[in-house]
Image: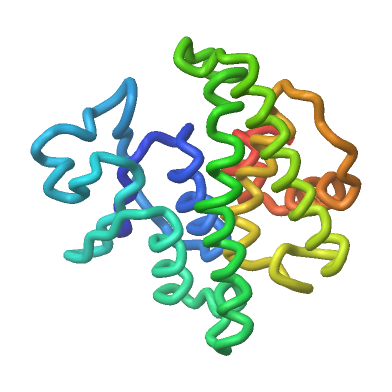
Length: 207
């Protein structure tokens, strides 16, 4: 059985759990990370030298990096609908997944640490204001894409790009900042909520 290492509250672990739900892949999860088993232990570092979750073990195959993991799961467990093999369709999914991992994640990091985690190292008012503007700018890019597709991030159909980005959309709405009006993003959020995997893993078990 697939083994998932990482605490369920981690946004990147939840990518893996949601993907497993979509693919109906059974798994066993172990709590690793802050507050649980240490990712700096010798045993964990042997699996991932970056000391970060998630990590999966699929038989004798070990993999880390959340987007790489969900690509692997879709490719290995009948996920053609989530990660199409046609080069142009797959490239569009990859494009938005890579955007999530770089631009979008980088945009919300400071705001989340400041307003949600209450990190003392992230309380500079000017830096926070700049980060809020940058996050809003990136969410506006997503708004434009969803207006064009009228459905999901990479096009008409739900894909791995929505798993990666949908978790960040939940973080946008759950973070106490002034939210710009983004009607396409709001409709998308509700559309994702129709999926049981998102309700369970993407919205922290809330309706």
